[in-house]
Every structure is written in structure tokens, then in C-alpha cells.
Length: 366
Image 1 (cartoon, rainbow, N blue to C red):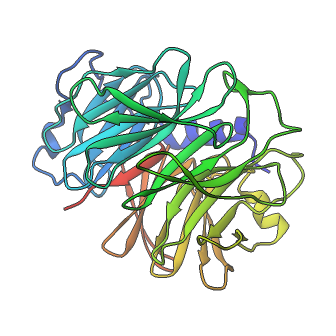
Image 2 (cartoon, one colour; image 1 turned 120 degrees about the vertical axis):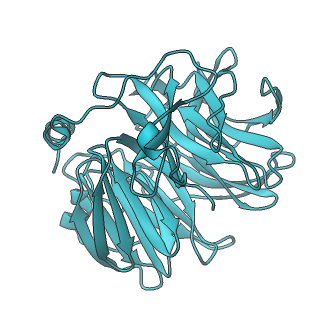
């Protein structure tokens, strides 16, 4: 099994002498990169620099940066506004800020700080009409799950909070105009230290986006599988990526599929194959009946056939991170700056980016 220490050593080796241009700490517009100023924005994601700073990066399809927006701390997930040009970046849990910007012009909105006794869990999604932003949050003292509902106007006023669905929500996705799916990790933490691993209650829950009503809740048999990262597949199912909180030497299935009204169905792999992922799935995306999931902790990604749930292959990628879909292909990023274009099931073309991508990114429309 690859340890976090080994992962960091591999990442440093892969980065070599690559560096990013310094990013200013207080901007009203992102810093542009002259060499790619005319390139088409296709990727947006959080990143870290060789000097220990953090940024939100808008880049071309091959990962060359167009804009870099300084962030006050490590970012995590990014949400895109349907029919608009806004993106929202969420700070890594327990996060204290979210940043909205216009990804076409690079213009930033003022940082929105977390409310008192609240923290962000790193993910969010816009409403179907683009007028509201839903963010996964927690009560700082208890980790009680909150969906913060923000009006997409200057200042991002919070207009509602949805509660009562579980502890430690992580990713939220919109599966239709009025329905949210939430990966509830079930873990109460102090900072990033877990406090309730013996009693955790992870779940996949569905809420009515209009009023927060609980529509459905499903669980896995193994309560040590913390449901965290989500994606909607081509066929409309929800794909769930888990973090296993059990014994280090124990293998556990880390990806599952769900259709409303049915039980969760776990994807298939041998124990030694699951152990390659080092108990953690980050980003997931579906193309043409295949599902790709990354593992930064395992320094690899896996591809499954959705209908059979069978593993097609596992390939190494140092600090494998974000995945998105463009023109029937996956775009996969990494903390080492590697960007892969993958045609299902497994044809790969690689590019080298100067960006140290974080765990998630999004593919921009256009």
C-alpha cells in the first residue's frame, strides 16, 4: 500500500524544478498568463504552488494556465453556474472561505467567509437557474451537516440552511432541476481529527433543493466506508467514491452506483486491486458507459465498465486528482502537473502542465 509519506516523495520527484509564477495576495482580477492569453478556457481547478501558496487556475485543455487567482488557503472543489460564467471555489475542510469569479474575464468577487460556528466541507453546486449556490457545511462544534443556500448576488447572502440529514457532508451534486444528492461522510471531526469512527453513520441522501426536505437515504453495509465524492453518470445514476476508515491492511470496495429507489451497488475488483487506491477515491466521471475514478493517495486511477461493474484497468498517475469530460473523452489531472486525455476505455495521451492541480477540477463549457 502507498503511504502518504511515499506519495509526497513521489510528488516531489515528479515536480522536479517546475514552478509557478508568484500570485498576488489581494486582487480584483486574476493574474493573466501572456503566453496563453488567447487560449480557450477549458479547465478550472484549485492548485498549490511550489512556494506553498494556493490559487484557482483557469487553463486550456492541455493544462496551460490562462488565469491564476490567489486563494487565502487550500481550495478543493469548484462549482460552475449553468448558463452563466461564474465559478465558485470552496476551501478544503474545515474551510473558512468560498471564492466566486467570472471564469471568462478573470474578475473576482470578494471572498465570502464562513458564518460563525460554521465551516465549509469543500464542495457546492449551483441551482439549475444559476440564482442560488448550495454549499456543504458543518456546525463547527458537532459536525452536524448543513446545506448553506446562498443567493448569487454581491456579498453572497445566505438565505437558508438545510439540516437534519447527517454528520459530515462532503460533496453535493444536482441530479435534476429540484433534487440534490449529498455524500454524507458520517465523521465528526475536530479540525481534521476524526472523533467517532466507531459510531459513524455515512449515507447517500437526496434533498429537495427548494426546501431541504429529505427525499431518500441509502447506506452501505460497512459503516466504515465514508461516502464522500459524487458524480452523475451518463445514465443518470449517482456514482459514489468512498474513503475507508477501517484497518489499514483491510481491503474495501471504494466506488458504488445508485439509482433512486434501489440499493447501492458496489463496483467490483479484487482485494489487492482495491488496496492500490489506498482507501480513498477523489474524483469520478462517466463517459460512454465507463466510469473513471482517481486516487491521489494511491497515485493511480481506475476504469470500470458500468453495466457489468467490472474493473477494466488500473493505471499509475502520481497524485491523480481531477477528472472531467470533454467531447466524449476524460481529462484527468494530477498534482505533478500531468494532464491526460483518455478515450474510453483506455487510450491515453499525456501533456505536461506547470500547474500542481488539487483533487478536483471542472471542464468549462464551450
